[in-house]
Length: 148
Length: 83
Image (spheres, rainbow over the protein chains, first blue to last red):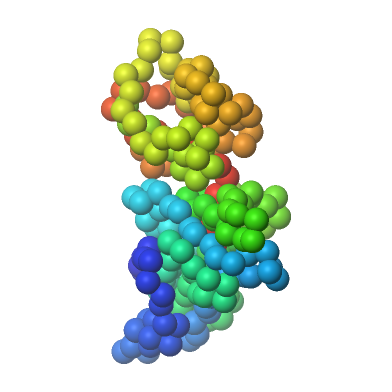
């Protein structure tokens, strides 16, 4: 189980190989990769601010919650911070379990909860300047689907 | 008490982090927000509508009715938008 917050990009293949290296207990791995969406010409770059310290604590708490709810053998969350361009990778969630249902559902849960509980804020740059992005009610609804 | 402001709240207050001595009137996060609001235009704007403000005490999410005390690390920020 691990969480990382970093400015640098990550390589999905490298992370996957490290995750599964030497393991014979896993029946499958689910992974989600979030990308910076460009929204046409309106977003030229995005900067993610976060709350160092609290971010890691929240990600660890979310991961611990997933382990309580599903039978996970391993989980990994890598979240980037700083300035990114459309198309770049921003977040990686990986879950491994003996049977697919646990890893698939836990991966979905982790990304939904992360979006409403981890202290990250998006600042978008566009042709008319920059602005802080407002939270979406649909994100709250997606997280609530899993119950508190 | 250490107070941190993030994202649009940092932009509105013009402050990222500060150390404050709590007045006796401040018992909860809501009291703290009300007191901060009285400190000037940027703060008044930042705390005008608490429905758009989230808070944490010692790096854990907290509701506005939670008590605060000297020595706490309190943070104010808008609803999160990560992922």
